Image (cartoon, rainbow, N blue to C red; front, side):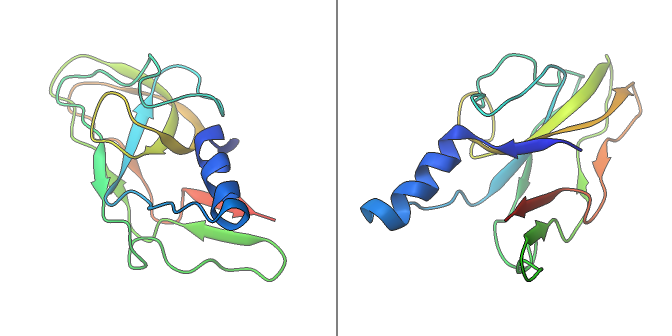
Length: 140
């Protein structure tokens, strides 16, 4: 999966040590599915979020249980500890090509990280899921 940190988060992380500007991470943080392209400039209001019937962003408690300590000696990697399971589709379809972590339950908000996913069409009765350790953030 290709992906990146958003411009929003990059700026917040630069301001933290170099301007002593406080940044409080979202808790919970929300996983979201997208049917159109995301990039570093995207926000939670970017058009193209999945829209199958019963779709909703998934709240994940932002703690060390769900996001264990980073691993690696020269490149730090952090991954989801548990599967991220989205609501089952009760109608309609969405062809998902991207996912992201965002700081709001719906609508606007700020994307933290985004990535491409293998294109999958969510049909009625399907329950989309991101397996444990399948969403990884790598920093070097």
